[in-house]
Amino acid sequence: MQAIKPVKKPTKQRKMLFQAPDHIRHKHFAAPLSPELRASRGVRAIPVRSGDAVRIMRGDHKGFEGKVTRIDRKKYRIYVEGLTREKVDGTTILVPIHPSKVMITNLNLEDKWRKQVLERKRKALAIIEEVAEKPPSEEVAEIKEAVEEKVPKKKPKRRKVKVVRKPAEKKVEEKPKKPKKRKKAKRTTKKKTEETKKEEKPKTKKTRAKRKTTKKTKGGE
Image 1: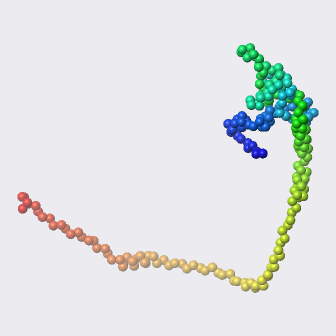
Image 2 (image 1 turned 90 degrees about the vertical axis):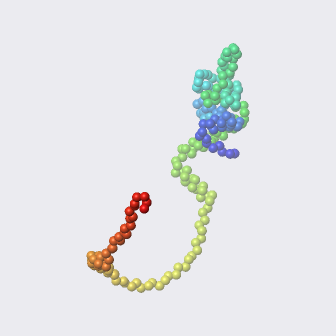
Image 3 (image 1 turned 30 degrees about the vertical axis):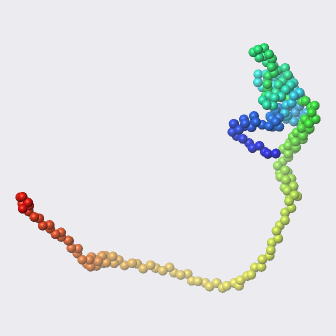
């Protein structure tokens, strides 16, 4: 059976609710049992069936008790005997109630399969209560013992490796070397600049040749 993934989007939640198959719709009809039934049967909730006696716990008809006459799985509603209203034309109809608004006060146990479901649920709740009462240290110890019994541990064999030892060499003591002193560079920058100035020849300025100008005469002569 494929597990149903939890959905967060409201649109998808509504789609899953209204397009659910019949075996999942049956689970949506679950209603809590009364305190007396819960104490005697050891079950917290069970889906409502026709023939069960219920008490309405919320809404306009709060406190009304009656027998379930019909169940509508398509619209997720149940109909209680005696809970009616008048229409405008004068006819009376049964009022639909959602199963989450009722509490079961008496169970219809004509079906043998329903008795088996109640017994199975009672045993499951008893096991959960026993586990909750036990301290966590005992649970962990039991789980470890069960795991050790199921899976025996086998250690892999290690191969022996022969180790060849080299002869110890004599260490020669080395004398610590003294750090070399750096020689100070002579200040010969000024002398070099003076010599370079003497070697350089003075630059000669180039003179531009004067253009010959002709005197213009009248009439272009």
